[in-house]
Image 1 (tube, rainbow, N blue to C red):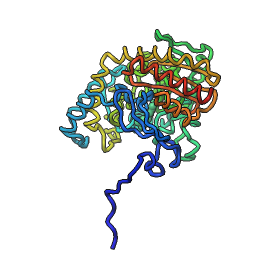
Image 2 (tube, rainbow, N blue to C red; image 1 turned 180 degrees about the vertical axis):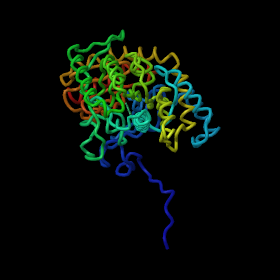
Image 3 (tube, rainbow, N blue to C red; image 1 turned 180 degrees about the horizontal axis):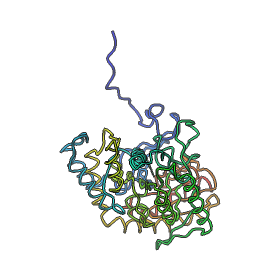
Image 4 (tube, helix red, strand yellow; image 1 turned 30 degrees about the vertical axis):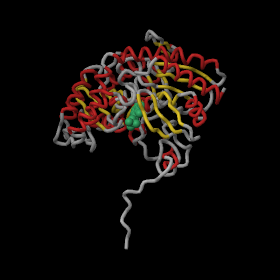
Length: 448
Ligand SMILES: *Cc1c(COP(=O)(O)O)cnc(C)c1O
């Protein structure tokens, strides 16, 4: 006789031990370093069980990959989630609508830079990028240029891990070599030169390098204009591609080039949106209005996965007037009411306080990370808004630096040559000082 499938098997013992070999972690082998187990999260703190058997309470310098801008267990976000789950937590969006989705869309178009008119909800940032790219192709086909099927972007970008999103990530860091023949071939302009922004919001960059970049970008676009559907970029700050700020004038050049050649400008504000760089949206540094904008990450304050694609009425009208008439996408969990309700509550919390908090965090990071410059292994320290970065002259020993930071009361997740923080906006000055001191101490202990 066949045994009934086991639905109730639950292992016993240490969760991190049970995790190993069973559950994949991002960009990690099954037998990678043992993860830290989270037993609680409150305010800006995580309670951890460490691989060495100890427990630790740490300040979360990562805001859970840049999402938890209000910290954990915020009473207002909890209340919004409870209210909505008692009402209904999910319904399909085909043929149905609901208050949380409509309210959030009204608020998003009202706060967006420029005249955004329509919202398409997606269930993750990567999917929102897929939708944005797809809608650019539909837009071009609808306006008589179906042959325009390539995208122009800059090196060093990150737009997500699904295939179309991956195809516009940096070709080297984005692991294009792992999928030969599968990824569409798009156009990569050079990285804009690294820029700095001071406490008063003044940007400086090497003017000659900026001129050279501008000429290169313009000529690449001109050469390929007839094949291009859109420019897709992270405005002003490249995130997962290297935590690299660049001059807002580059975004202005992109806008001009898009207009000259009939391309859409897609702003991927998934990392930069909702105040992280010191402007509500990073496009505002450049005074530029995109045609299409993707938001995600901090949209729900880190509670639930939700992203949105905002677009102008020109884009919406072209697609509506096309032979399909529709935007050809529709995820199962599109416009999830629970996520939308929490997102609206998160926007309430952002209110006007985000600007004060981000400026305060920014000045704490500038002061607190400066001592890192005295370390032999440190090549550069940079901050932009509530983002602080220590760049080493070598690859970070991630397990060792993580463990050293935890011993110093801080959770970080370094990558490549970068130890960085994107803390919750509500992090107090004392906790920002703890984050900075912990990062500097961890680099000193491991790399000198
Ligand atoms: C994180 C990120 C994405 C992908 O979002 P997911 O929710 O992880 O799919 C896309 N673009 C940028 C700029 C990001 O930072």
